[in-house]
Length: 372
Image (cartoon, rainbow, N blue to C red; front, side):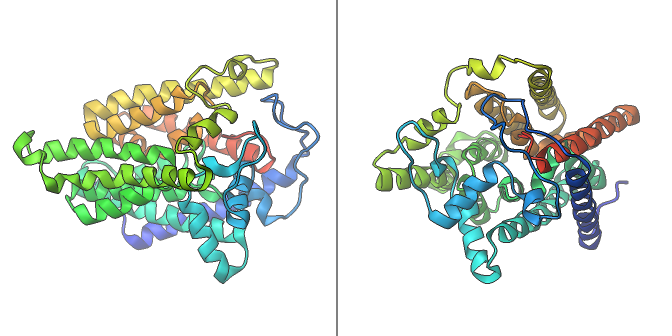
């Protein structure tokens, strides 16, 4: 008989994780005196992170400042051929802006939203396991989640925690056949990041499963609720059309960020051992994702396996492996499967390797090194 966590126990684990990871981040920031990162040619070599007890430093780096730019200045285009903030989806900046009216600190507001969303994600993940995967230990699921190599992003001014919570809630209510809440959470997930639209894949699968593949029951007016998710993505594109006169602005802007539907050769041209190591880590994430997707399909849930596979393929379709570890982070079926593994040695090896990489990526992030 498996033990399922109570809300109090989830909250205690959450508090312990937040305390330990932030203490480690401050130590990692102040113990090193690193020069600029050389993993990519586009990283500025005239800047490196100064040690100090700065709250913003350990929670806001890289894309954080683009999202902060949206909060402070709204969406806008720079000059022709220049990257801009229009590729970042609106829900997280909107919530940060709303909370900052109360707290009067944008980065603190964003961090609070991230960690609170993480707590909600943990609660919903345990509920999902408890109700639909009763033979899996929910404590182990949370361990795999919180020790994933890039899990530090749950503690940052990034969208990962919010998207994780919304995606788990969407799947949870889809499996419970609660259409109203699927519409709400699915719509919000699609407003959080581009891969939110992919949640429609498992929901369609569950619709077929729940109706026992009876097409007369599936293709009804009631089933149109699944359109709520792509509608969230459509609204963001519509906003681009209304304000910038370009419905496909997102994809055009993404190409300026090195993401297009073609192979970015510069990403794979490594010039030093640092770049080679970074590329190797990205490749490990890709290989790991494909392998574990197969087992999710075989042993856990076909709908979620399709969602994981679709997310990885969309990330790879941009022609680069950049940020693949962060895209993999929010794919919660991975943690459910990992906890289901019966072999104790395999499970320990996965947790041990993941914990070491988690420490590595935390050190990289707080020292302004590329961590995804």
